[in-house]
Image (cartoon, rainbow, N blue to C red):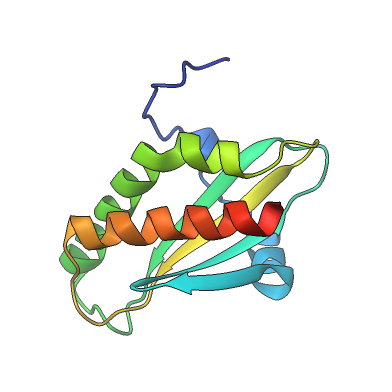
Length: 130
């Protein structure tokens, strides 16, 4: 299904759920940081296409599920609005990507700070792919 460029959805097909892919992502993926987020990126096998995303907030720093869910919602929203820029930044030479966005701060950041961090990550990924 071809979606228009202005489509800001985050469908289930773009959620990274495979335990094998997640293990490979953390074992072999290259990473970076844009506070309060850290990221890992791995080029997937040629059979897949697109970008699969994993969003994680550690229970270590945020004991209450309410806080973790709030942060995950903010990260998802920031990613949804900037997904088109990420797809443009990563080359589509056959194959897809697995991306993990990990929240690392013990503080609950506001949406603007998280959105800036996601934008910086996309810029960093664009520079690495050139």
